Amino acid sequence: MSLSPEQVRNIARLARIAITDAEAATVRDQLNGILGLIERMQAVDTSGIAPMAHAQDLSQRLRDDRVTESDRHEAFQSVAPEVEAGLYLVPRVME
Amino acid sequence: MINESLVQLGGRLRTREVSSVELTTAFLERIARLNPVLNAFITVDRERTLAQAREADARLGRGEGGPLTGIPVAHKDIFCARGWRTTCGSRMLSNFVSPYDAHVVERLAGAGAVCLGKTNMDEFAMGSSNETSHFGPVKNPWNTAMVSGGSSGGSAAAVAARLAPGATGTDTGGSIRQPAALCGLTGLKPTYGVVSRYGMIAFASSLDQGGPMARSAQDCALLLNSMSGFDPRDSTSLERPAEDYSRGVDAARDPDRPLVGLTVGLPKEFFGPGMDADVAAAVEAAIAEVRRLGAQTVDIGLPNMELSIPVYYVLAPAEASSNLSRFDGVRYGHRSAQFDDLMDMYCRTRAEGFGDEVKRRILIGTYVLSHGYYDAYYLQAQKLRRLIAQDFVAAFRHCDVIMGPTSPTVAFALGARSADPVQMYLSDIYTIAVNLAGLPGMSIPCGFGGHGLPVGLQIIGNYFDEARMIEVAHRYQQVTDWHLRAPAL
Image 1 (cartoon, rainbow over the protein chains, first blue to last red):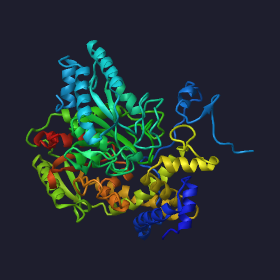
Image 2 (image 1 turned 60 degrees about the horizontal axis):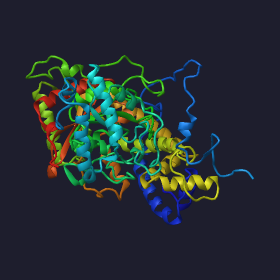
Image 3 (image 1 turned 90 degrees about the vertical axis):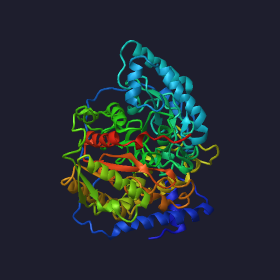
Image 4 (image 1 turned 45 degrees about the vertical axis):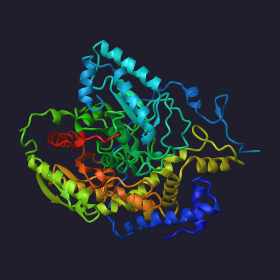
């Protein structure tokens, strides 16, 4: 299994990370190295083994439906790049 | 005073022989003098720290001091602390001042511990040498040409160099134990779910676990008593009765043979050709000492352990690619100064904000989760994870704890492995399986190898058996002095 430059650009797009064509070649070599390491897994027969998602078999807790948090939006928005009137600003997405 | 244990320092504080302000100032002065060499701290805020020390002194003055009241403790910069810059070692969060406290930070502050500062780390905890930090690598206090290990390298170097008497760390694939081994201190990763992940910036949520780093097992127990406990804000935090992790340390035993009745498992996979001879010699000498203290040893096998690295490098990047999607330049952290549209803003923000190793892992994670590859990679890795965990369950039928090396080598030279990610990943061969299984593990100093660099002995316990691991480590530390050795600085 070896990634093509086109696949690397597609993965980067899915991950929302800009990469230049010059970077893509190095990144491809490194990702192929890591995939080579991972490939060893494929030799093991795992039929009949249940996947393990987690170290503890837990079910999700439920809690009472009541307000437990106070409104601290000013504190939380004080660390945002751009805010106006309590809203996060991003570039226009619709004309 | 800087060489004393948390237990000794706590005693001095409660008898008012020394004040928290005096003690904290002594460590702040060492940080001011030595941090320019070691780069163990990313953020130090003298006034904020001393204000906490004054509060602790007031509490001690009222006779309300507990075991940790007035003790300065450094936090890995992965833990959010209200009012403190919390960077996670990344450019992405280099301007982030946390509006809230992590559960661990809250618990230690509640116990009266003083926050000494935020320690350096591999970016988003992704690394084994602390070289992926946006703020530069940490230097090993035993030899500043060597790495500290990672990702909790700043906490490890700070404790080893006596810049802090104790610190917090996190361990996803060995990030507490490996730097503890490479810097010569005691570090403990608890059973998954014992320490809340709330406010601990997420890397791989099914593996991440916070824990203490200090000079002795006894000091780690003291910190863990305060750091652990149920927290409803972490959906995987376990509801269990509170435990005193020092109970084994305080138990009465035959002074000559305190480990009689203990069976130590020695996995053959831990003693194979991958380990350097100097590490093997120190680890084998430690095991002989443990036998002399009365323990029996038994050979065991962990046949699927060799798969732990490939499994980890599917599962951890997959979880990371999802967790790190929150860094998009909208709600916090870095935002690119120039972009064409929203998509371009995301892509440039993340290209600028993340370093190379973090990007590699996000890309690998994105790939293994992508359409058509999920079964071959993610699902297969989850199945192998179960086989790895079952190996431990079978092994613990024959032993109480498992011992082996923490790292196959002593600290390596800065730059020696940074060009080849795969080579770096192999550093964690002995630690990763423990995270996959969710078991507790610790590393304690057990001697010195080449170039006078520390070697760590790894102790792995069964689920929720931290108190026993701590006791075993403590009994060893009562008859050895490796954990008391200090680097010349």
